[in-house]
Length: 420
Image 1 (cartoon, rainbow, N blue to C red):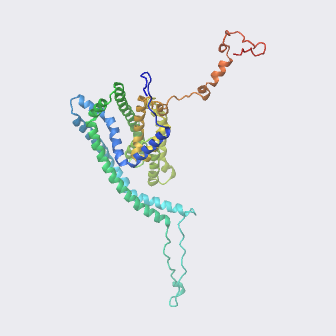
Image 2: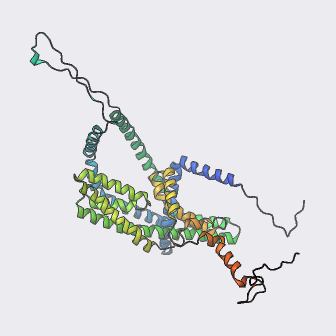
Image 3: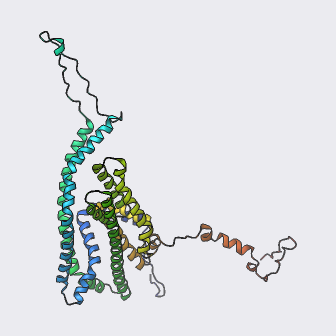
């Protein structure tokens, strides 16, 4: 059957159920293949962030491979220098960990004895044993063996399993870190070549411009977001360091660096840091006011930062919907663990940059962007008030001048309608 040249055929669209199933299958695939996908995702985000530095070195006559090596080794040198400054305070807290854990266990045992449901089993003394050769004053009671405590046995078993799991996780983290560094070097060295080949493979010029523009926009947005967030986190870290120094908590610089790193995880990072401060206060101090003082000081700093400083520095362009940011952190943390929580917001920034360049995905920008603080009412969106005003206003009636009385209104009768 011939089709006329004036008619354009539309491509068949996949049903909604098929799209939902594809998204669910993709999520589970990312979760199962985390050992491979996670280093690739980290390397891609770092490439988008560090590629402008390689481009600057290229403009000054430095080879791409050499520029990539300089950038990667510079990054490793900064991280190593920061780690060497923090290894001393961290080792002190690790050395105190066994004693601290024992203190926490002793406190937990005292708490258990006061609660009847979880109290340890009571040991009943055995009756005294008397013999004919010993007098009654020298009666020695028989010590019964201690009754088994199921909670202590469970803690011991879980402790052995946790040690084995930590050893396996340490090996996986080491291999993934090495793979990420090598992949980052190759991506930075071949970033120009990959972009040129990708744009060359696209036949339409308009699509080429859209792809290249989307890639550059994603680079700008990620660099702007991470740079702004790093500046805010550095300020929060300095303020937290000064607050811990004033309170007297040991290793204040370590706590400032920890919150500066955890600040890249929205919502969950500050909650984890508050829990760490409460634990450190419990280990270090004895009174209730001293225990909660570090956490209360950081809570005040976080309130000031999140309500006054961050909205003023970030601006409207980088603000995103808190609902979708929290959902992205939850999903990425479930898929990839702690590293996924760090990657959630940069991945959301990439998705928003791609959605702004695509007509089919542009609707998602309405949900990803924070938008205006004031929203129209449902009556205004449905046009209910406007429709009533048009019905009541004389200008809305045809053939009636401004200030004239509509026909039938003076007599109270409805105007005669002629049937068609």
